[in-house]
Amino acid sequence: MDKDIREHFWKSFQASPFIMMKLRGASGHAEPMTAQLDKDAHHAIWFFAKRDNRIGGGGKAMGQVMTRGHEVFACIEGTLVEETDPAVRDKHWDNSVEAWFPEGKNDPSVLMLRFDIEDSEVWTSDMGVKGAFKLMTGKPMKDHDAGEHALGRV
Image (cartoon, rainbow, N blue to C red):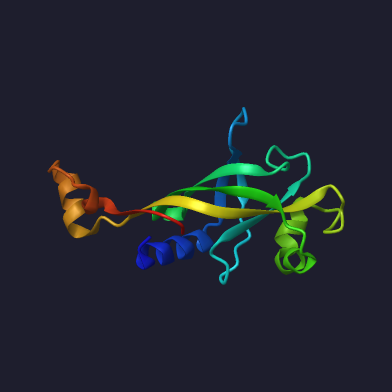
């Protein structure tokens, strides 16, 4: 994946760290999760969840991202596994997490999941003047008029 698109994805995702997650093959709908991001680890995303959450069992999963302002859209595939490193859990636990889990970080019903990213598809939206003009006047649009698109690991 192009470095610029990758950087744009992570910057936009950091500003709006929400993702719709679903286990592959599971019935039911995806659900919104707040991603815990690490600026030095672009291979994974972390989540706190209850063990009985629909993604709590882990496994192959897919996440959908649409950032605030619609700058980035992404589909991310990977595997959810329980994060067992207490240092990682402590690093990401803060007041906003505690608000969802008032029994605290040592509550045995709370787990931290790591989403190991295997593949992704990312779209960035940046129409620019030319793209906006075409859209407003009904002129034919080309894919690159609306932004960029890339496949590969983010």
